[in-house]
Image (cartoon, rainbow, N blue to C red; front, side):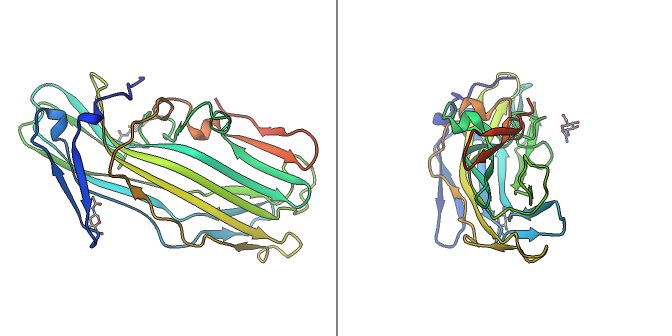
Length: 282
Ligand SMILES: *[C@@H]1O[C@H](CO)[C@@H](O)[C@H](O)[C@H]1NC(C)=O
Ligand SMILES: *[C@@H]1O[C@H](CO)[C@@H](O)[C@H](O)[C@H]1NC(C)=O
């Protein structure tokens, strides 16, 4: 189902004030209609403080695991008069992706999102690939089926991290001689807390969060397995930003394909033309 992102989010007046203690209050104007009275009681977002961990146990690939981004919100949906169904939950899109694996002077492999790279689109859906436009359908969403007599309060939460494998050897060669010399990654995301009316597709943006994950791993492929990789800065990630003013959801953040299906692995040799190693899935 394609959902209109134009929505009526601009009519939803919630101002969040974050005080120095990190407590969160919500203030809103007098409700005039149902959509203006869905209330975000509390919203938390952070990136865990543990550094990225690196796993050199395989002689084929290096694996790393970044800290988790987390977002959770406590939401109040007032009594729903009619037979309306509202789903409230998290939608995420990737806005920027640099993901480079350097192999000495041979060249580099890179995971790319061609439409984002070529600036044909501003964001690409990071849905689980099944529950579009939602990021997931377990803790990530909650559905309120009307009519309801009382307020409905619930928490919706999500988390994300990277856990990729990068080959020690050049991906387009038959040799698995270790040549991987560095990994650099810089990705940005926007995560929205959204309410969608299932019947009308009316879409309300309740909260907007921006976050970024940066990574630099230096590798000495000459060293024995287990002693090659070293985590460089940033050892601690920038914390997510909960925006004071919501942002509209770009159309490609709501529909297929998601980042996972659209990404391609390129081999970019030092000299010569780039080669597609893994084409997009869709
Ligand atoms: C937000 O964080 C506080 C402090 O850790 C916690 O008590 C509260 O339950 C959290 N709220 C949500 C909605 O996750
Ligand atoms: C989540 O989505 C999957 C796939 O559509 C479905 O099989 C599953 O029942 C859903 N789970 C919940 C809790 O809605």
